[in-house]
Amino acid sequence: MGQKSKEKTWWKESVVYQIYPRSFQDSNGDGIGDLQGIIRRLPYLQWLGIDVIWLSPIFQSPNDDNGYDISDYQAIMNEFGTMEDFDELLRQAHEHGLKIMLDLVVNHSSDEHAWFMESRKSKENPYRDYYIWREGKDGKEPNNWGGSFGGSAWKKDETTGEYYLHTFSPKQPDLNWDNKKLREEVFSMMRWWLDKGVDGFRMDVINMISKVPGLPDGEKHGGQYGDFTPYVMNGPHVHEYLQEMNKEVLSKYDVITVGEAPAVTVEQAKQYVGFDADELNMVFQFEHMCVDEGPYGKWTKNPLDLVNLKNVLSKWQTGLDGIGWNSLYWNNHDQPRIVSRWGNDGEYHDKSAKMLGTCLHLLQGTPYIYQGEEIGMTNVEFSSISQYRDIECLNQYKDFVEQIGMNPEEAFARIQKSSRDNARTPMQWNGEANGGFTEGTPWIEANPNYTQFNVEIQRKDKDSVLHYYRKLIRFRKEHLIVIYGTYESLLPKDPQVFAYKRKYQDQELYVLCNFSKESIPVVIPGFTEMKENLVLWNDTRWIPGELSPYEARVYLI
Ligand code: NOJ
Image 1 (cartoon, rainbow, N blue to C red):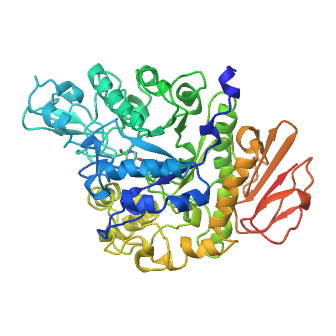
Image 2: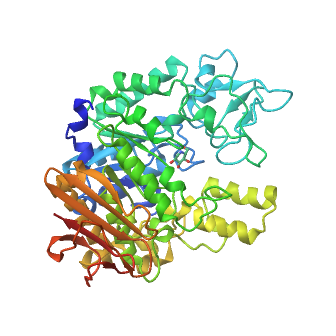
Image 3: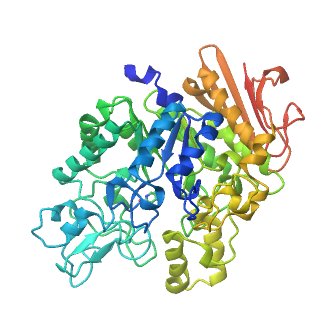
């Protein structure tokens, strides 16, 4: 165990709040959230008690994938404002004691980025090698990989007759990290933002930047295309490139970093986030988000198997303890809303939202709250496919109906449950039109339940989900055990209760969470519940040895 494992650092002690700027707060009535809108809400975030704001991409973009397709890394998206607005946001955030983390999307750029526009001009163009170009094979794509948003991962470009790789949409060509010049461009762009004063980066699919040479065909899991995962994720040079990034950029600043890392295992994660690895502070792993998947992957949402979820999270808790650092999340702009997914968005809405918050925030790691989670925002029940906006779900719906021949009702039901748009409806500030998000027409319809669940109502109500999240955040700040304590899983086989123990110096913290809508007996061997030790609780009637539906109890001893 290296010395760094014991170090106390601000990013371990922080709570991060993710803003999806498009849907957070509109200030000019165009129906799209913007930077001035965020500035207006800084006092709210300060009141909530979070430390760091992660902004989903705010850069110039044709918005094929809502800003995850960047055409200029050093300019602000027109709809969001100007660089002056950004400078003001950064200054005011700092004045409010809040740090700003940007979204670094450098596995790919937009096809409208100047680099790509040059790159496609000719095979000899100096920018050609910034991207991944290949000749076709027998008049077809260079290999069988499917893109993450449907179709092939290759697109033929008529100018030179070659294909370019796009692991996401055809408007998101993959950058070629094997090219040192490209890496240097990215590093100097990062320095430019850090010199401005930003406090860190969330790195989009950063474990995909190094592809296996030869780009071999992927295995087909029933569909038309092969799976690129083994040849794209955690590729041969990814650690070399991240260490270089760390040496050239990150190590020179005091920053927070988290790398999005689909399909990463705990063992692999140690290489990214090990305290002595000199790469990143944290990764976003996906294993716990996949426990309810089925035959259609994320488009099947099976009932939650709690034992499986606990196994996965416990494995990450103990696997990284003393070695690296966990990120903790239930939600982000790509996931359906947690209260609808693993809680109860009807009768037990508030109680289950608080329970889920408790369960997550008291684990070891840095918690991430996604906008609206703190008021228990739910999935949206759109009634027509025309109400959806996300490229991923629109393509998937078409694939289901046209390629697979699924009946449209079933396809629609799958989209409703799993679409990323569940997370992207406007932030619900108050009971006014569109939840106070905009005075215009929102780019995506608001969830009509904004009249019921909104910030204004919940701020006035001390028992609300919002006040509970605020309490959770404060509790972490006041108790080092939450941050630095060790983790032990209790009752790992119990199908309804998620229970664990944290230990730090001479303190112990017991967390008991009922994930079901039944009252159930709970006995922790060797532990006696005492009401005077209760420090966090989402109920009013205390019955030792029994948890009411979705009850969460936390004892500090
Ligand atoms: C992961 C991001 O979170 C997601 O929103 C995006 O579509 C893909 N990466 C591609 O950038």
